Amino acid sequence: MHSDEMGLGTLLSHLGEEEKVKGAVVSPIFQNSLFLFDTCDDLHKALTTDLEGPPFHYSRISNPSVAIAEKKIAALEGAEACKLCGTGQGAIALAILSVVAAGAHVIAPDTCYGPVRSMLSEMLQRFGVSYTFVDGRDPVDFIDAIRPETTLIYLESPSSLLFRLQDVDAITKVARERGITTIIDNTYNTPIHYNPIKHGVDIVCHSASKYLGGHSDLTAGALCTTRERMNGIVRHELNYIGSILHPFTAWLLTRGLRTLPLRLKRHESTGNIVARWLETRPEIDRVHHISLDSFPQRELFLKSFSGSGGLFSFEPKVQDPIKIKAFCDSLSLFGRGVSWGGFESLVVPLPITASGVPDGRWFIRLFCGLEEPGDLVSDLERAMHLLA
Ligand SMILES: *Cc1c(COP(=O)(O)O)cnc(C)c1O
View 1 (cartoon, rainbow, N blue to C red):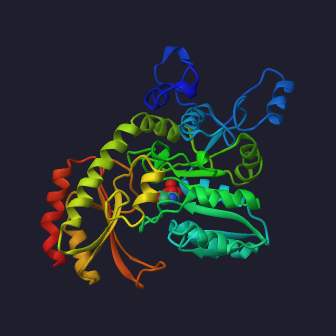
View 2 (cartoon, rainbow, N blue to C red):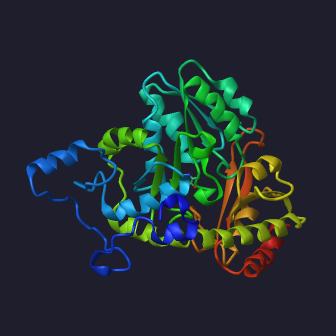
């Protein structure tokens, strides 16, 4: 069966695993750095063909255990090729480095993932790459910021912490006309809820440490694009920087991927229950969850994505950091920690700097795990008096 004809569950259960080594139902872990060839001619041929798939020669470039997860993610995204890296940030960094050079200019939303924001504003400055951060909720923000030297429009929709959306179709249309490359961080949506390549995006990145892995036991990143572009990235950025995923981690990722659609449904329904409940509470000013009726970009949400998730933030009326931290400290099911996308619920309070937000305003970010929704609501309800 061709992957185009497979439904999601079938693809995640079987694609890339057709070869059963000694009949093993689960592929063994190819825990080896290199591969041997019968002849030197075969070895030389392997070194000069497309580097992103078999024949495998060295695990810095490709490995059969890693290739299984790559095949599944590429199929989910509708991409010709996928490469896995050691972290999501690693995948994003490779993607960005592949489209900038000294003198280039990059446009990104000011609410994009923190380390990406500082990579653009601090590290790349040293290499002569300039940037403009925009609000980004109106596509005109990006279009107006375009300069002759703009080579990259970086997108993250919804963006981190504030969950602001970008009109990807409108932005990629202009980017294509002007020969500007687009990259999107699709971690929030996963390929289940949104496939940016179908909307004109050139490179799609994921932190697979979140929903794709799904069990808080690995870090990984995915980069999806055309075969041609991928060959360039593998030959240059990946080959020189070497931020690859290890075979054992890839094997864990494949295990996580099998249940992605099931887990995501649960995170989504619980996230919606908890967000709607928080909206009814007098202690809270605003809840920022993309699927709420009150979400300011509701039409764009409905037009773009086939679902939402368990990650969102809210603004307590009380803005005293001591009270906000006491509220977070008193929760017992929401663990105080960064990251998200695993089985466990999480909370993190943060002061935010972004366009349209009073400087230093405190937000509380919640991630709803796989616990019973009623238990999560009770946990929050017991702590709510601390926000009075
Ligand atoms: C976590 C995260 C990243 C970075 O991924 P790592 O795997 O932690 O390197 C990038 N973008 C978003 C939206 C994230 O949440």
